[in-house]
Image (cartoon, rainbow, N blue to C red; front, side, top):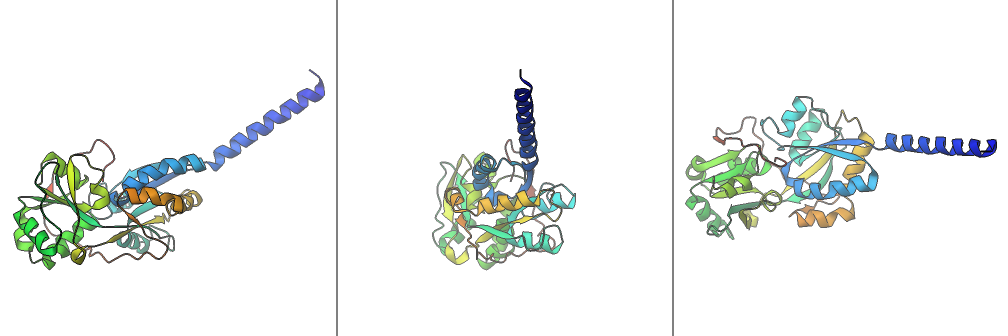
Amino acid sequence: MPFRFRTLRAAALALSAAFAVTGAALAAEVRVMTSGGFTAAYNELVPQFERTTGHKVSTAYGASMGSASDSIPSRLARGEPVDVVILAAPALDALIAQGRVAAGSRVDLVRSSIGLAVRAGAPRPDIGSVEALKRTLLEAKSIAYSASASGVYYETELVKRLGLAEQVMPKSRRILSERVGTVVARGDAELGLQQMSELLPIAGIDVLGPLPAEVQRVTVFSAGVSAAAAEPAAARRLIEFFTAPEAVPAIVRSGLEPAGKTGTAMPVSMPASPPAVPAVPVREPAASPR
């Protein structure tokens, strides 16, 4: 083999190896913690992001609020590594105030409404008006609600506004580390309340629809970059991907509404200590948890 050809071939191989190393260096692993409200859209969009960018995404799931061991606040308090957190905007603001999420990194992703569901095939009670909702809550033998934003609203505001706290809270159960819809599908609760986007993907339930507009609580789910992010640039790129026009169809299919650049979270009361309501025993889900 002529010397010149061998030299050129060696140079080409070296250049190819250099590009491979550079490509590997540019590909990052983005660690995400996300709450249930955005999960259905997230699970559809992440593979698209990975194919488009070459980055890999690893995910931990948990509630936006509460003291469950797998809630996002609990995970961060334990020091679990993360680059992006996605959760209800008021909870994200609290993490920013604590210095766990970078100030100025909050981006509103979606707006989410609360809905109700029953077990598939069960009678479908009317929730089309406030009065109908009150009757349905009073007549239900058992009610399951989430330990996150929708559940906080239910136990601290909704039932009080309806004047039903004394009647319905004794038969209501806060669900930890599991989807409310899964509990209803098993028959462990007659009625389930959670974000519409968390109810719709669950097999074995019939979603009755959203709460009446007069008592609805729309929650904005937002993303932020961890103050200790190992891959802040890739983290920001992932958040930008979730807000791109191409992400809208997946968001709408999941029962959510894009928040837009001016999305503003409606306040959610977050008492320092949640009311003493018994929790349903935790059953570890086979797939991704809340």
